[in-house]
Length: 94
Image 1 (tube, helix red, strand yellow):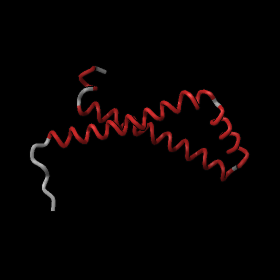
Image 2 (cartoon, helix red, strand yellow):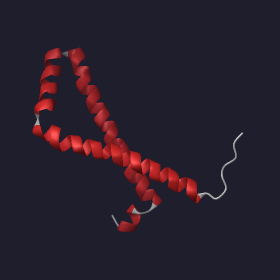
Image 3 (spheres, helix red, strand yellow):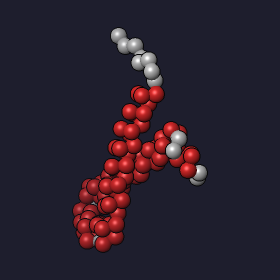
């Protein structure tokens, strides 16, 4: 991708959408693991133990998740400010 595309409004909105999809995938994975407690408590415990003791999950994926949340939040605030400042006349409201 070119640098000008990533600096455009459309490029930033696509990046925000991709970070939103990433967060939805995380929530879906979290839901599936929690749903395992209904199906089989032993399976839930083994998966939870794996997630809690795995080096890759704890020290690699958690910072990536934190970055995704912060990126989505900051990008949303930036796009909101940018969109409001680009319109000189505000919308009317009743």
